[in-house]
Amino acid sequence: AINILILSLLSVVYFLHPGLQMSLLGRPLVGTDWLEGEETSRFFAFFEYPNLVPAFCLILFPLSLRVISRIKTRFWAYAYCFSILPPIAASASRMGVILGIAMVAVGVMYIHSGASRPLLSTRVLILLGVFLAASVAFIYRDTLWNLLEKLFFSRSGSNSARFGLYEASLSQMLNRNVLLGCGIKDLSPEFGDKIPLGSHSTYLGALYKTGIIGFVCFVVALFLIIKRILINSSDILYSASCIAIILLFFTLEDVDGANWLLALLLSVAGIL
Image (tube, rainbow, N blue to C red; front, side):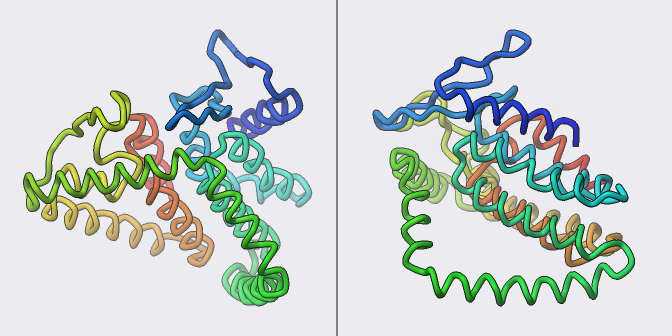
């Protein structure tokens, strides 16, 4: 919880002072990335690259919120709930922003439901939330579509590079070894010396590196972990919603993008 609050405060400074070259303890907190000649300023925080910011927040949020929600004054729980949005927005991760909003919605429902009637209250709130969201989306469908279109194409260079990388990764895996995959990721001159094939998607990466056999084992292991978490959960709907959001995020990001990220995810899964 403290880590996320620190990131939130730093990201607020980033928004209040655009263009400021922030650093802390000798480590730059802001940087730029270049894709197909397009430059984007992004909030790196203390991480190796900016997309690790939303990954860190989304993984820690479900566990830390359970602790924060025990505070008698719910205002602080709600304040913490919304504190994950500034660092995620500052990282300029489009998937992170969408799923961050979804995670906040789940967190608000969890806090509001309370510990006494979690399952019943959450079900009712989810139904009401879905109905209200569908109604608002229908009434303001044109405005919402324009906002989503603007968000999706805010970094057009990233879109073309990402999907080109997916296509090249699948093509190489199918041509070399469908059953066992290609092993350690190969660097592709087409995408630069820092973007390996099989990256920018956890599931595609598993398929690329281990083939169909390894991918099936990966899916089975993932299913067993999720099953154990849900069995031990006191609020299945809350846990299932958080898990679904995290799984969606790693559709377009690497869980092994940094060694500590994979260790963090497995540690949180073990605690849950």
